[in-house]
Image 1: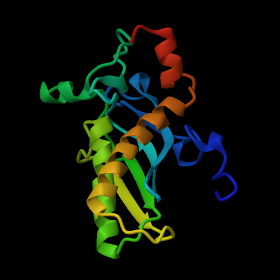
Image 2: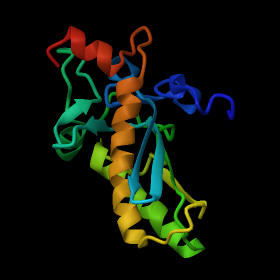
Image 3: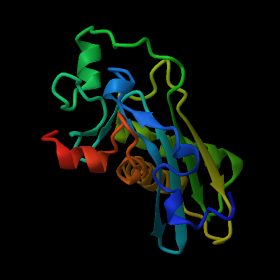
Length: 198
Protein backbone atom coordinates (compact mmCIF):
# COMPACT_ATOMS: atom_id res chain seq x y z
CA UNK A 1 0.00 0.00 0.00
CA UNK A 2 2.81 2.41 0.84
CA UNK A 3 4.57 1.72 -2.46
CA UNK A 4 1.36 2.20 -4.43
CA UNK A 5 0.39 5.35 -2.55
CA UNK A 6 2.20 7.69 -4.91
CA UNK A 7 0.99 5.88 -8.02
CA UNK A 8 -1.78 7.75 -9.86
CA UNK A 9 -2.97 4.40 -11.21
CA UNK A 10 -4.30 3.63 -7.73
CA UNK A 11 -7.22 5.94 -8.56
CA UNK A 12 -10.32 4.48 -10.16
CA UNK A 13 -10.24 0.73 -9.80
CA UNK A 14 -7.04 0.51 -7.75
CA UNK A 15 -6.97 -0.88 -4.24
CA UNK A 16 -10.33 -0.77 -2.47
CA UNK A 17 -11.94 0.55 -5.66
CA UNK A 18 -11.32 -2.70 -7.55
CA UNK A 19 -14.73 -4.26 -6.91
CA UNK A 20 -16.78 -1.08 -6.52
CA UNK A 21 -19.96 -0.33 -8.44
CA UNK A 22 -22.71 2.30 -8.34
CA UNK A 23 -26.36 2.67 -9.30
CA UNK A 24 -27.64 -0.77 -8.33
CA UNK A 25 -31.41 -0.27 -8.58
CA UNK A 26 -31.60 -2.65 -11.56
CA UNK A 27 -28.94 -4.97 -10.14
CA UNK A 28 -25.59 -5.50 -11.83
CA UNK A 29 -27.27 -5.42 -15.26
CA UNK A 30 -27.93 -1.71 -14.83
CA UNK A 31 -25.01 -0.70 -12.61
CA UNK A 32 -21.85 1.23 -13.46
CA UNK A 33 -18.30 1.15 -12.14
CA UNK A 34 -17.47 2.84 -8.87
CA UNK A 35 -13.94 3.22 -7.63
CA UNK A 36 -11.41 5.14 -5.59
CA UNK A 37 -10.91 8.89 -5.88
CA UNK A 38 -8.85 11.60 -4.23
CA UNK A 39 -8.88 15.38 -3.91
CA UNK A 40 -6.81 17.90 -1.94
CA UNK A 41 -6.55 21.65 -1.43
CA UNK A 42 -4.87 24.27 0.74
CA UNK A 43 -6.18 26.80 3.22
CA UNK A 44 -3.18 29.09 3.46
CA UNK A 45 -0.39 26.92 4.85
CA UNK A 46 -2.74 24.10 5.86
CA UNK A 47 -3.51 21.17 3.60
CA UNK A 48 -6.69 19.07 3.48
CA UNK A 49 -7.03 15.85 1.53
CA UNK A 50 -9.86 13.36 1.07
CA UNK A 51 -9.84 9.81 -0.26
CA UNK A 52 -13.17 8.24 -1.22
CA UNK A 53 -14.07 4.64 -2.03
CA UNK A 54 -17.39 4.71 -3.88
CA UNK A 55 -19.47 1.53 -3.85
CA UNK A 56 -22.87 3.19 -3.78
CA UNK A 57 -26.37 1.80 -4.20
CA UNK A 58 -27.43 5.26 -5.33
CA UNK A 59 -26.52 7.57 -8.19
CA UNK A 60 -23.66 10.07 -8.51
CA UNK A 61 -24.46 13.75 -8.96
CA UNK A 62 -22.81 16.59 -10.83
CA UNK A 63 -22.11 19.73 -8.76
CA UNK A 64 -25.37 21.23 -10.04
CA UNK A 65 -27.37 18.25 -8.72
CA UNK A 66 -28.01 16.62 -12.09
CA UNK A 67 -27.26 12.94 -12.62
CA UNK A 68 -23.68 12.14 -13.62
CA UNK A 69 -23.68 8.35 -13.37
CA UNK A 70 -25.60 5.55 -11.70
CA UNK A 71 -28.49 3.22 -12.39
CA UNK A 72 -29.01 2.53 -16.10
CA UNK A 73 -32.47 1.47 -17.22
CA UNK A 74 -31.81 -1.77 -19.14
CA UNK A 75 -34.65 -0.95 -21.53
CA UNK A 76 -33.20 2.38 -22.68
CA UNK A 77 -29.64 2.38 -21.32
CA UNK A 78 -30.35 5.87 -20.02
CA UNK A 79 -29.79 7.01 -16.46
CA UNK A 80 -32.72 6.39 -14.15
CA UNK A 81 -33.26 8.51 -11.04
CA UNK A 82 -32.98 6.13 -8.08
CA UNK A 83 -34.29 8.67 -5.57
CA UNK A 84 -37.34 9.39 -7.72
CA UNK A 85 -38.11 5.67 -8.03
CA UNK A 86 -37.92 5.27 -4.26
CA UNK A 87 -40.28 8.20 -3.74
CA UNK A 88 -42.70 6.67 -6.26
CA UNK A 89 -42.84 3.54 -4.08
CA UNK A 90 -41.21 1.31 -6.67
CA UNK A 91 -39.11 -1.66 -5.63
CA UNK A 92 -35.58 -2.35 -6.90
CA UNK A 93 -35.01 -5.29 -9.23
CA UNK A 94 -33.01 -7.05 -6.52
CA UNK A 95 -33.41 -6.72 -2.77
CA UNK A 96 -30.59 -4.42 -1.62
CA UNK A 97 -27.99 -6.39 0.28
CA UNK A 98 -25.76 -4.78 2.87
CA UNK A 99 -22.88 -4.69 0.38
CA UNK A 100 -23.03 -1.00 -0.43
CA UNK A 101 -20.76 1.52 1.18
CA UNK A 102 -19.03 4.83 0.62
CA UNK A 103 -15.83 5.18 2.62
CA UNK A 104 -14.12 8.50 3.26
CA UNK A 105 -10.79 9.37 4.84
CA UNK A 106 -10.32 13.09 5.46
CA UNK A 107 -6.86 14.24 6.56
CA UNK A 108 -5.37 17.61 7.42
CA UNK A 109 -1.98 18.74 8.66
CA UNK A 110 -3.68 21.33 10.89
CA UNK A 111 -3.57 21.05 14.67
CA UNK A 112 -6.85 19.57 15.94
CA UNK A 113 -7.79 17.88 19.19
CA UNK A 114 -9.71 14.61 19.35
CA UNK A 115 -13.16 16.20 19.46
CA UNK A 116 -12.29 18.50 16.57
CA UNK A 117 -11.08 15.56 14.48
CA UNK A 118 -14.38 13.79 15.10
CA UNK A 119 -16.27 16.89 13.96
CA UNK A 120 -13.94 17.29 10.98
CA UNK A 121 -14.81 13.76 9.83
CA UNK A 122 -18.54 14.36 10.34
CA UNK A 123 -18.44 17.52 8.24
CA UNK A 124 -16.41 15.77 5.54
CA UNK A 125 -19.12 13.10 5.42
CA UNK A 126 -21.53 15.77 4.16
CA UNK A 127 -19.68 15.42 0.86
CA UNK A 128 -21.32 12.04 0.32
CA UNK A 129 -24.82 13.53 0.48
CA UNK A 130 -23.65 16.29 -1.87
CA UNK A 131 -22.54 13.79 -4.52
CA UNK A 132 -24.49 10.55 -3.94
CA UNK A 133 -28.28 10.33 -4.09
CA UNK A 134 -29.70 8.68 -2.12
CA UNK A 135 -27.01 8.17 0.51
CA UNK A 136 -26.98 6.76 4.04
CA UNK A 137 -29.80 4.27 3.41
CA UNK A 138 -30.49 1.51 5.94
CA UNK A 139 -28.59 -0.98 3.76
CA UNK A 140 -25.58 1.32 3.22
CA UNK A 141 -22.43 1.11 5.32
CA UNK A 142 -21.30 4.69 4.74
CA UNK A 143 -18.55 5.86 7.10
CA UNK A 144 -15.98 8.66 7.33
CA UNK A 145 -12.68 8.73 9.17
CA UNK A 146 -10.71 11.83 10.09
CA UNK A 147 -7.08 12.47 10.97
CA UNK A 148 -5.00 15.53 11.82
CA UNK A 149 -1.21 15.26 11.79
CA UNK A 150 -0.50 18.71 13.24
CA UNK A 151 2.62 18.96 11.06
CA UNK A 152 1.73 22.46 9.87
CA UNK A 153 1.61 23.64 13.50
CA UNK A 154 -1.35 25.81 12.45
CA UNK A 155 -4.78 25.79 14.05
CA UNK A 156 -7.69 26.52 11.70
CA UNK A 157 -11.31 26.56 12.92
CA UNK A 158 -12.67 23.06 12.45
CA UNK A 159 -15.84 24.29 10.75
CA UNK A 160 -13.76 25.95 8.05
CA UNK A 161 -11.69 22.80 7.54
CA UNK A 162 -14.82 20.64 7.52
CA UNK A 163 -16.64 22.72 4.92
CA UNK A 164 -13.62 22.42 2.62
CA UNK A 165 -13.36 18.68 3.34
CA UNK A 166 -17.02 18.20 2.38
CA UNK A 167 -16.41 19.87 -0.99
CA UNK A 168 -13.29 17.80 -1.52
CA UNK A 169 -15.17 14.63 -0.56
CA UNK A 170 -17.88 15.34 -3.14
CA UNK A 171 -15.22 15.92 -5.78
CA UNK A 172 -13.34 12.78 -4.71
CA UNK A 173 -16.55 10.76 -5.21
CA UNK A 174 -16.83 12.14 -8.76
CA UNK A 175 -13.11 11.51 -9.31
CA UNK A 176 -13.56 7.88 -8.28
CA UNK A 177 -16.32 7.36 -10.85
CA UNK A 178 -14.58 9.38 -13.55
CA UNK A 179 -11.30 7.49 -13.10
CA UNK A 180 -12.80 3.99 -13.20
CA UNK A 181 -12.22 1.49 -16.00
CA UNK A 182 -14.97 -0.62 -17.56
CA UNK A 183 -15.54 -4.32 -17.05
CA UNK A 184 -17.64 -6.51 -19.34
CA UNK A 185 -21.30 -5.64 -18.67
CA UNK A 186 -20.25 -3.01 -16.10
CA UNK A 187 -19.36 0.21 -17.94
CA UNK A 188 -17.31 3.02 -16.54
CA UNK A 189 -18.57 6.57 -16.91
CA UNK A 190 -15.96 7.57 -19.48
CA UNK A 191 -16.85 4.67 -21.78
CA UNK A 192 -20.61 4.71 -21.26
CA UNK A 193 -21.00 8.44 -21.85
CA UNK A 194 -19.02 8.22 -25.09
CA UNK A 195 -21.24 5.50 -26.50
CA UNK A 196 -24.74 6.56 -25.43
CA UNK A 197 -26.94 9.59 -25.32
CA UNK A 198 -27.16 9.10 -21.56
